[in-house]
Structure formats: C-alpha cells, structure tokens
Image (cartoon, rainbow, N blue to C red; front, side):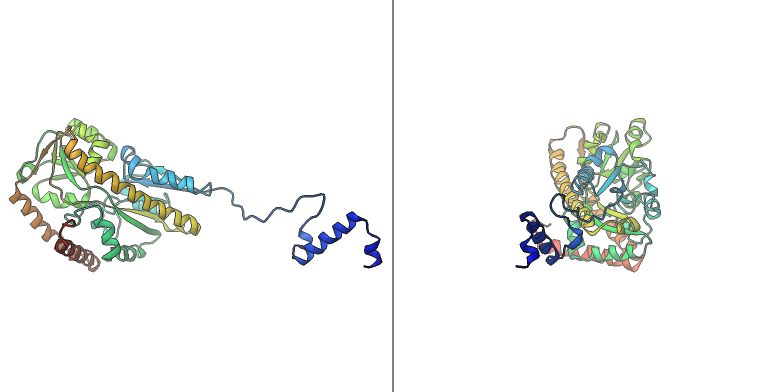
Length: 364
C-alpha cells in the first residue's frame, strides 16, 4: 500500500475505490459519486405522440363495430406514442373523395372498399361486392393468402403514388332490403331505386335496378321519404344495427355474394414516419378487426334471418336465380378482359370456386 493510500481516511478510501470501479467499467466522468444522484439515461424524446386521422366508409352506428374497437385497442396499446383520430362516413371528406384525400395527405388512413372510394387502380371493381366471388366470409382471407390476391393488390398499389395498401378482410353478404315493394321475381326489381355499392349495382342494373348514391347518413331519411325504394348495401346484421330494418318491410334472401371486400390504406408518407413497432401494432389490430367482424357478421346473419321479426323474407324462383348465377359468368369475363391484372383476379376466383366445389362439404 502506498503512503498516499495509507494516509487516506476511510471515507476517502471508499470514494477512491468507487472512482476506480467507474473508470474500469467505462462510465468515467459521466457518472457521479457519493452525495449526488446518477445521471439520467439519454432519451431520444419527441415533441409529442404521432397523430393520425383515419376516415372509414361507414357511418357511426356501423363504425362502432367495423372499426372503433380496433382504433381504441391501438390507441391504448400505443401507450402515448401514437394516437389515431377516427372519423366516420363523410365527416372530413365525402366518401367519393376518400382516395384523393388519402393520396394528398389530408387524411392519413382509410378503411373502405376500392369501388366506393373511387380508387384509380384497375382492380377497384373487385372491392366491395363482386358478384358470386365469395360464398362465405372466410373465402376472402383464403383468396388473399393462397390464391395470389395479396401479391396482386400489392402490385397494383405499388403503381399509385403516395398510397400504401395494408390489408383486406371480409364483411357481410349482400342482400336487397325494400320499403314496401317485395321482390319475388326479377321483374320486381325493375325501376327500384336502391342505395348500394358500385360493382353490385352495375351488375344488378341489368334487371332494372337503379343504383343511387347519396351520403350514408341520409339513407334512412331517403327510405322514409320515398327517395329510395331500398338498399343493396349490406346483410341482415347491418340492416338491423343501423336502423334500416325499422324502415324496410322486405328482405330478399338471395345473396349476390357472400362477403364484401374491405381494405385498409395509409398515406405512404404518413406510414413511413411510423416506427416499425407501431406499424406492426397497427397491422395486428387490423387483424383483430377482421376477426371481430367475422364473428359479428357470421353469427348475426343467421340469428337475424331466423329470429329477426322486422322484415318479411322473400326469394326468387329457383329458375330465375339460376339465370342470375349464369349471367354472372358473362360479367366475370367482361371484367377479366378489362386489364391483364383483372384477368388474373378473375382466374383466381375461378380456380378457388373449382377447388371449393370439389372439396364439397363444408366448403360447398
């Protein structure tokens, strides 16, 4: 022991030992010793949480199921790092302007089908209700996972500036609900003014149905005043949930398709500003939303057809319904010829339908 150390007091020896430890451990002068607190660790602080505005195609009563639980879950799990403000149909911009608003950055994200939001991609016709593309809600994720639709959607949106497609899921089947004119034959559709999604309306117009586009929140009043004769927009679950079943007296049980294609999109610049862990969290809660809707619709459709008492059920004669199914083949071919990529989607639909048919029960 050196004389210097020998002359040190006990407290000086302790301080010397601590300095030696800090130097060896690499903490050096940045650390403090007895009599003061340790220096705070470096934090890369931001001025506040990331703020997003997301608008959905749906009105508030429906949005309470198709998206609100997801946004609430995300905001809670984001733990103050990010906050999404949710807006319903037409609250920030008209639904028909959703895509342009998303692309320009007026809003950061959208939940909608392509056809309703006027997406400029060649596959927009498949968003929403494409006649007879699906029978059940699980057909949608199966088509995206196993039959190439995911890659087709990614390719299509890679060609669009400043919009990122994130995910597509299933909603409900399509039925026609009418106020006071029951549909018991194809002839009964002639002249009926119905609120509905573009692709299904385009197909059904060959039977005289007249598609009408108005703001979502105005539909119930339009049904009451006679501006609309009915809706071709949803299934039983939505019709009861949003109040249309209180106005409509009749429900056509023939379903033109089994599940709606709905997607999530983000403004690319906004998406790139979100750190990877929050991007992953958003994707996880999107999947949570898909799961919630599958159960809500699947159980609701069956329950309300059997136990619902607000509408009388009608059906087309079997031979007329067979004709509608046959007519859809020509519609498929027409759309397939519109672009090579659309042709790939229709080919996937045909392959999938053939596999499901051969698989038999419980698939078909």
